Length: 406
Image (cartoon, rainbow, N blue to C red):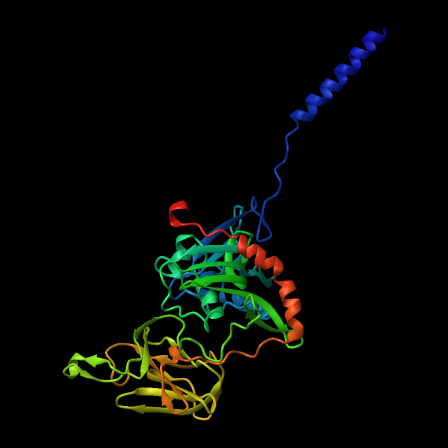
């Protein structure tokens, strides 16, 4: 009897197990923009030339009064007054016998979208996707340019602009040499954890230019004012009183040369007391230091130009502008856009001629020992050296691979 009872229990448990395994597992509901994907139809389109929000909705059978009421009700939440050509949008329809447009979703950027529900309760909202952040590294030996080196490694080539800003006072990025090396630790922002959207900061960098090592560490030198600077391994500020160049990127097409000979003038000596930076028309021209604008004028030879007095020692001038962006008497800070590259005056191509005076004499700015920024407080130095130990160790551990080993 006991044996029969045991067999009955085993049989019951086995049948329950089979019944449980044979149960159909329901798929979880998948949502898109808050709608059950099994109950709605999603059509992806792009804005065509001449498309307006009203035209798109009228094509789907919604009359103008209804469109107007929806826009009035949601005007504080969304705006569809200007749809950009080529930008994607989504039409959401009910999946039933009488297909109706339920909602409209506009995607002007990958970082978010604007949404309006048109049926049942009308409402609108603009959603910005949250960003996630990761610290990344890049390193390399330069063959051609820093931009191409980063691009070849599938790194964000915009790092070039960040590094050029950090080293703007100490490295001539127009004359990087083959074999120059770099390492960098930077923070990248992502959307959906996979799509890179922006570099938010460079935390530390290392550059070897013409055999000279230059570290750069981001550091808050004034916690009250929130001032962030880049300091080197000796706690010296990388910032200088003058930028190396009045434009971000381009090339030096002609240097300061007091014995320049020009074939057009019978190979006679015609001194060139400026440095020419070739760049496309419209390229922003930057003031290389703080100062006051003393001249905004035009001459037949110089074209349109701006002159800035920095102090009783230094003055700079920027020639051949397409147009100026400042007025006489205006105070400008280092890096302010004072004009745009052009071809005015005597010039064979678009460039800015950068001229530099020291104590009233025109000199070659690249041969001057220019003043450095104010050093950090001695009391802060000890803390700085302690604070950079970890990040410097991480930077030093990055290996620069040769192209043959990559």
